[in-house]
Length: 120
Image (cartoon, rainbow, N blue to C red; front, side, top):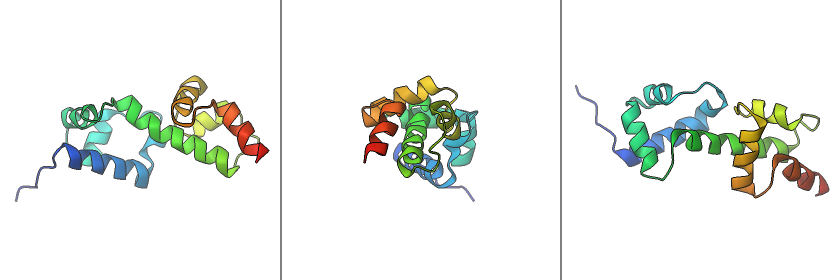
């Protein structure tokens, strides 16, 4: 019996669901091939699904990591963690990359975001 093939939209939705439900983005070494295996497709279809939304693989994964880092700082679960530690806890390989993506989504660097959260 053949499985029904997902279209680009279905592949993208499955990727988002897996990232959210299983927090695959926390794996610093996550690859497009690994994600493709999880989605039951191949890397070409992963690339097409992302490209159709103006994203590449790194942008897709790092957007989830940024949201995770923001949530960690907003929740205050790690008040004494350095920005580098927050980056590592969120799956980023560096603080610089985390800051770049947090700035894109929140408009502030991690330090500025954390300061704002403590002022509230």
